Image (cartoon, rainbow over all chains, first blue to last red; front, side, top):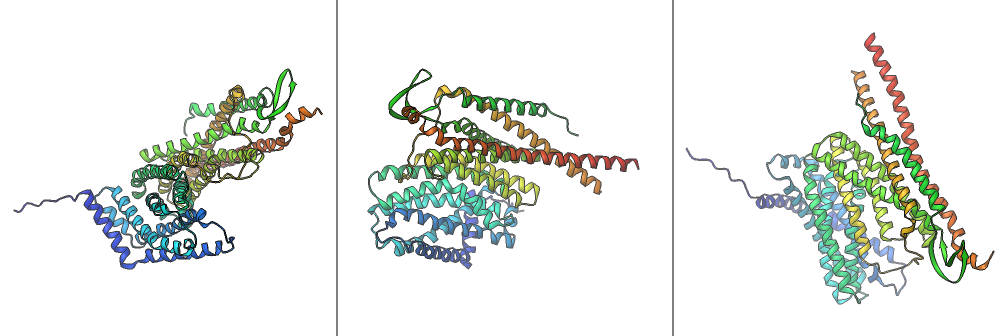
Length: 239
Length: 246
Length: 61
């Protein structure tokens, strides 16, 4: 009689399978990416209208860091709200929960896929932002360093956002509720990354100091909040 | 029927003593506590045998209650987090009730802090609002506490409501100090307001501050116990109603 | 009034309304919460008494 061996796949492998499922699902329909992209474009149009009456010599660089993050927060809210709608409609989460695996892997794969989608949208919308608003002004040569706070900020947004989106996906009036939970929680991170982004776009003296401090604080926020979300996700998902 | 614990009888005493202590603190703050030094003047006068060559700041009197109230609100939020964690571990609904009431107390005291803080700041800084670290943190705190209650209302299943509220309570309580830290450490580029004085208390005004500190903490504890009793009674009522319907 | 004294006390009068309003607001917020609590406690206690009575009557009859 042949011996039947059951090999339990490693955690990393489970994570890869889950993440692959998320990505495949999205890239098949591209539903979330298109809606996020279009939404980002429309936010840019609103920025255009909002800034249309600013004086000629108005220094857009001073506010560009803030505008970029406003764009990212609004777009990510839309994406996070959508990221659980398919699970709700097809009851896919229940299926995943039946599998004997570490629940925090679900959080990790969800957060990673949300991060990937957010970064993809940023990859499209930020050059557009540059094209629409920054071509007439001259950002400091250090502006490419903004990619660092963008990455750190997006990680935090995706991590905390995934936990909060899971919570609100079961609630009534979930769209507004997610914004209400998400924005106050994300505020400190936003404060830090806006400072880091602005300082590299504007340039000037004391650049390195402010940049390093705010980036370190944003990183610290990421570590604390991601650990907390990871730990708490178990309670959220099993309820 | 649940037996009455020692805390229930303590509640009345705490409330009474708290009211007395904070009243004493209030009276002392306006009578014996000296006024804080303001701007140095080129001239001087003798007031009650004391050489005074600075402006006297009356607005600082707000701090005798503002600071205790602010600390109480933080402590209440800390209890939200503690009871939330206990709930998540034990899954006993009584801890959810405690966490909810602690958050209610936090909301009341956060609102009190905001109200008194904004009036002080309107006089001393000349603006109703500025994105200053303490103000920003308290604003975020208010939003989180309100969000906590809206989240509760948006969930129907009691167990799920309790769990999600507990998770959010823990995150909110961790987020508040982080928010303060980050807004404080990162320097702002713009300084639109003129700071006439910095806040804070010199040590010789400690007595009224301590009195109101303990007084308000006791009042908060008393209110918490009463609210707990009331909510428990309401739960019993629901039970009885359900029994009658059977 | 002595000009020097009025210099020294310059901010006292100006700040007084703010201090008074600040304390008034604080007490008011606390009072509103306590009142809501007391009224709802009274209401619950009343309902409780009525219900207990009802239960007792039912068990008898």
